[in-house]
Image: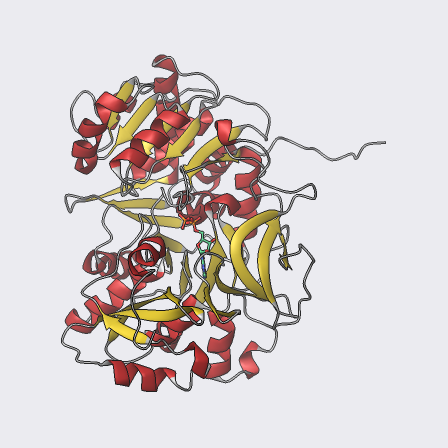
Length: 531
Ligand code: ADP
């Protein structure tokens, strides 16, 4: 006997149709790179998406074909995103901050047939063109000419019928940054995106409703802007999209557009703090700040919470669509002191229903959820990767569906997960582990420290010892002794760095995280004092 309920395939085109039908006039605001602002609505985005789907078919694209974007966040990108999926294609968001070789590799590997790009990335595209073997059509997103996106969709028909199919059809593609070897493609499905979006609406995750105004600072090329463009369509939230991430532009948008929700990596928030300290400014109606992509430092969380903003500290990765866990408030939240509340938020939170976590030791034994034992973190669920795209294929998971994240974590008895480190970044000192994340995030709490990175340096006796690289805040004279004194009651004594070195800047990845690999390579054989 089978059930007696309807089971339409879950397709992302239903999201844009729903948004257009039920929330048609709700605004989509774009702040373009040239400083102008344009206003559209969910109904107009849905219309543009249909036109773009029709245009892709006219260009000869077929089901399963890949359409690449090299673009910031804006309304055209959003329309292209739904339009490509609506013609049965796959929207491949490419990160323009990657190196030339990585860009060429990724676009060729994906076999993209169309490349849409922002005018500001034209120099990158010109340089890439001779090496791209599969791209047949180049379209400028914000160009006003005949070859521009606007002209293309204005020539097309609104009456395009979405291509239908299985909910397991692919509709999105995003490459991991490839910290080792070539980047790998993660192919998202209609079904996985919808389930991820449903999970992300919850009060304990993004807490979204029709009244929400979301400005995702996180770019659409960074793990689908954490799924915000899907979740926002589901509830008809207003979206505010910005082509630039300059702090003063963002603050003005927050204030002028009544932004209630935002999301970004820690470096984005650091830049905003620095701008506010220098030029003033306020958070407007911002109510919820999602921070993820790297561990949010305690001082950052405290500053936002003191301003009355709820901080949702999230952990995830490209392979997890990307939400893995997010900090929800526990039942006794209101009874906790401010410091205890911050203790909760610095951890990475719980999985939403649907996903599951476990930790393993080096012999693959499942570890207890005891709040102290750390091990390799694994995750499984309906929005977690099964296989990588193309010939990197083969299962990314074990026989029971567990995906090994490459992170080291502690699971607490109440379900909360706490990232200790990336397995590769852990500092191994005398057979014990020092968490580089904990060390650097403690250090940025010290007055005068703008940014910090802890790396393991080879040591003849201890195997590795921590070196802390610090960028001072402008005008600060903070010295090694000040930072060591500050850290002394925050971490175990044997965790204290053997040296603190001041640097002008730290290298960042294409998604704004500190590039630990480069620092490890640079300092691996550095001579620490006394070594
Ligand atoms: P990459 O950094 O390789 O491009 P992702 O953007 O998918 O790939 O990053 C995923 C990784 O980022 C996770 O495996 C984890 O190491 C780190 N990460 C993400 N969020 C957090 C967080 N809140 N705390 C600590 N680490 C995090």
